[in-house]
Length: 264
Image (cartoon, rainbow, N blue to C red; front, side, top):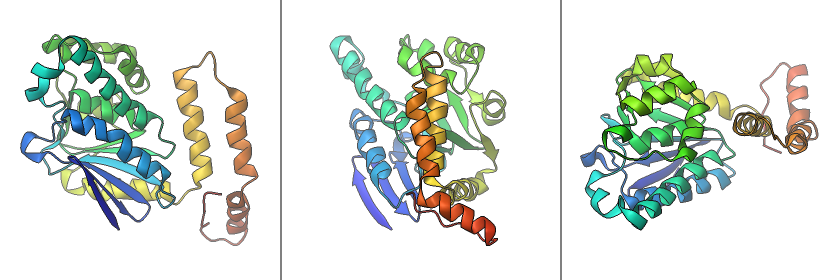
């Protein structure tokens, strides 16, 4: 196990899982500007680590995944050129998650509001406790919501639900979030870590090249259905058949054992 700290984001590796923790518990894990700026570094480090198969992001403590942006910084960051610069830092964080080749899971343990809700949406999957709640209250603050951030929302929810979420600024409880597609799974709070680790390990034991090809295809087909680079996606699929892992999978099937994949 290794441990590193950058600002108030913490990263550790536990087996095949990289854990990225939003650590600002006294302020319900609210994101400061520096914390947003650290997101790409943490996700890139996990994505490039050969020991990592799955990346999980969560909040410190049990009350919040994150309450969103630290409102104490709004006076300095939400006007004129500063607002545009802050948006770019936010966008870089979201893009870093969206471009991660390895599977990403948001483990939501309480409040998941504002920019942190967007961060969770940018992950491949979201597992929430039965006490989790979600909100994007931009309309309650007269904040314009960047259209680039609406695109990931449309990959998770219907357009009507995205509009409802943005128009009302409503807080959605976990059962509602599950019904609208915002959560992949809702579990009792006391089993949140256990269930998330089980899901992560289930993914981690499968063939990395197959997962990478599937993730690239789904993301491309959702993002640009009219102009998908099919040859590039085909190359990722063919790489699976040419891999040592494909041979290992076939051998394991014949020998009636679990395969051990190496990602090559």
